[in-house]
Image (cartoon, rainbow, N blue to C red; front, top):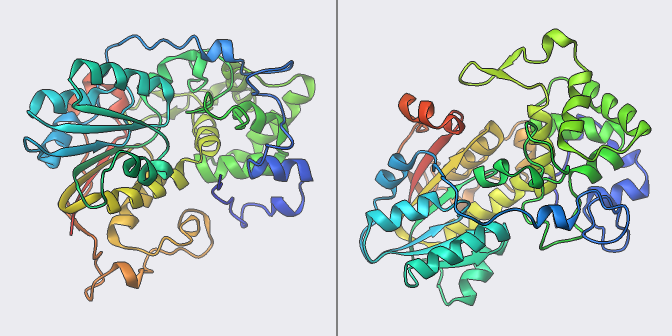
Amino acid sequence: MVIFRIPTHSCRLLQNTSLTVQKLWNLNLHSQTVGLCAFSGPGSLCKSEELNCVSTEKTPHMPVMLKEVLQHLDIQPGQVVLDMTFGGGGHTQAILKAVSDVTILALDRDPTAISLAQELEKENQGRVKPLLGRFSDLEALLSSIDVKAGSIDAVLLDAGCSSMQMDHAERGFSLSKDGPLDMRMDGERFSDMPCAADVVNTLDQRALASILTAYGEERHARKIASAIVEARRVQPITRTQQLASVVAGSFPAAALYARKDKLNRPAHVATKTFQALRIFVNDELNQLHAGLRAAQTALRSGGRLCVITFHSLEDRLVKRFLQGDDLSHFEKYHFGLEKQGTKKDKSETNKDGASSYWYRLQKKVVTPQKADVKENARARSAKLRVAFRC
């Protein structure tokens, strides 16, 4: 597994950390497992029995920006649609209801989500085809079911963490619900994959601060990293609310809810820390980039792509990809001292400097309507980008 490199300007941690930390950093734990999130054996902090109790029962799911997605994908009867992030199945179910005789390929890396997709497949007589895997697995998965490159009519990619994952404390994503500090989207499939508990209990202070800066855009990364290191000397940090308390303890009481979200509601000071750990543990930015490349290959000429993002790191990556920018070293755009904002990949742009693969149907990002945000607060930070495959 390739991990998104941490910025050298934040710290040159790989030159100063131990061999054990470097191996964890590269997620190369096949020979030396830290053991904090192992699915078996003593000392497990994210035990399988806790993860396995996640219910696959259907719960109310409110897909984000549904009207906008249906409008811009413009799906016609008989077409093949790829939902790259099936999650709770809200978008897929809406498409099935809105369009007759449509086939939906439902991809997700989370086995729990795929269980829901399999139930939907039974209910819809094969109109849904579940695919278990990551974005980076997509081309192989499509090939395995004889779906050829350039044959898909529409693609939806709803990035980030699903509501289903956030709502179950056992998954360890939510700081408002106590559970094991896990955060792995597909930990059941990869038992030696490090979880958030491994990261906070193993990496040194400089490495932790660099993660929080890079993936959470956290201004107080050093202060928080110091608090984590001090707390784990007393006892390992193994629970979500335990970590939230450690982060909160590094701030004055008056600052605990001084931050505001996009609805001007108080936001917990640990929110960015949880975001950073989740992105790092699941290699989300590299996976998003792989997903965009796979969508580009899968879509036919004239096919449509809708991508929903929820924070600036994701949105910047999607925007630059659709512009045809050179992303061969795309981490430098987010983290490097020298930004790559104007550099184009000549193999992917036309003579006018625009992407030779994509025509953006909306020049500006599409955001949720106020009524939709009021009904579904999780849509507040959503951004939709829409493009037409050239």
